[in-house]
Amino acid sequence: MKIFWSFARQAFHFIAAYRFNFFMEFFLVLLRMYGIYWVWRVLYTQRPDAFGVDLDQMVTYGVMGMAIELFIWSRPQWYMANQVKSGAIDTDLMKPMDFHFYMLSRSVGEVLTSIAVLALPALLTAYLILDVQLPPDLLNGLIFVASLVLGFLLLFHLNFILGSLSVVALDIRHISWAYFSLVRFLGGQIVPLWLFPPFIRVLAEVLPFQGTYYLPISIYIGRLSGADAIRAVEFQFVWLVALVVLSRLLWAWAYRRLVVQGG
Amino acid sequence: MEALRLYFRLVGLSMRARLQYRADFIMGILNVIALNAVNLGLIAIIVYRFVDLNGWVIWELFFLYCLWLLGHSLYSLFFWHFWDLEEYLIQGTFDQFLLRPASPFIQFLGREVQYIGFADISVAVVGLVLAYRNLGLHWGATEWLFFPLVVLSGTVIETALILMTACIAFWTGRSSMGIDLIAELNFLVQHYPIDIFGLWFRVIVTGIIPVAFMNYYPSLLLLGKYDPNAPYAWMVYMSPVVALVLSLIASRVWNQAIQRYASSGG
Image (cartoon, rainbow over all chains, first blue to last red; front, side, top):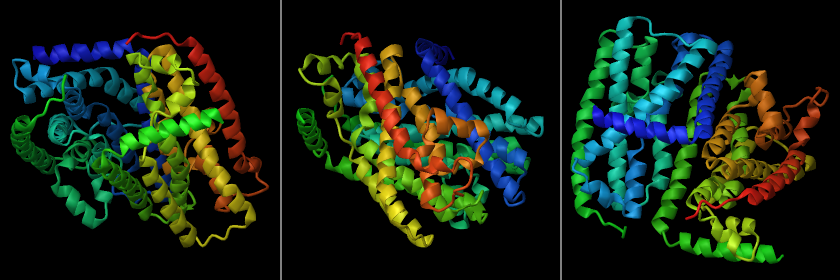
């Protein structure tokens, strides 16, 4: 816990040093929430019954998608790619700590800071101005939190895998764009999976990406509850175990092939 | 003229450096295509459930998207690295431009070209051609003459806005978030016709950060969606004017910013 805390403090200092940036980011999030709010509102006035849930639920889904976006993306892959490129990764490897765990603690630290200073204030603001709802009951709220944590861990490991590949492929900048948009798309950040055409939906439902946005938010708005919600969390957990194993194997492999370019 | 020659020389050099990484080149192109396919897919999924979005049918939305993208592609080809300006300032590497006996702006511009722009161009052109056909458009001379002007204006508008925002870094040290803000507004304007949003949003993207002139207003004309007698009908012709005004302001801001520059050492 102490180690998470020290990384969180570091992330907080970084934010405090660039305050202008911080306010911009905050504003940006509100703008995104506002955008999705209007899109759904207009669509619902045209055809209120075409989406399977009511407008308030859908707006909440959209706003949560934007709020989760704020902290779920820790970027171990950038850090790893940069360190490999500049050669500074050797200092990371010399630290008396498992590298995978070291990256995870960094990410957790960053995420804690983002939740505290960005996501919660933004959600509170959205709650006040955009008709965002609370979860239907306490149980859903609790399962949501568990599902969210699993979602963060899922995404962290997907990113870590990408970062491990960067050790071999050296430049992941361009893969990243398609990767980001694919995760957001298949993760159902903006459009929930139940609106997808059947063939994409089938694909999205077996891949781990739906565990990042779609499952936690569906639990939050009450679209999934009871046994369905539990099943969703199980799905996330099974994928998480698989991805942890894959991460360890891939990193061990990449580590052997690591070429430090000066530094 | 001298400046232009210098620019092309610098660009030629960075182009050659870029082409050293051929796999990266191909990956980059494929990526942009995938990215746009996903974006268009999202629009399609949403609108698929309806006939239209506030009166815009799916091909009109694609037109809106691709018109924006075509203007943006020239920006991303030549000016993408404005985004990196803050790095030059923080690391102190901006000094190199001031030490050489040539315009710092030209030197900075010539620093890089992004081939990603080529992918944007191809996606946009294909999309526009398909939209043109599927909508059964028949442009007259006015529209055909106006179209290239709109594309260039789009490029100038985006470039000027991003340049001004990047210049914030001369004062605060950081600017990438400001650029992200523009990118965000751009994202919304590119994807959705602004008439679905609330009044405040429309005022902002029209009058304050006028990205709506990259695609929305000219699209009203090019798609024949505007009523000539409506109170603000003249707005559909305004893109080139907005581009001109913005570029004048941007050049002043840049000059001010350069005066302000104090090296961080590096």
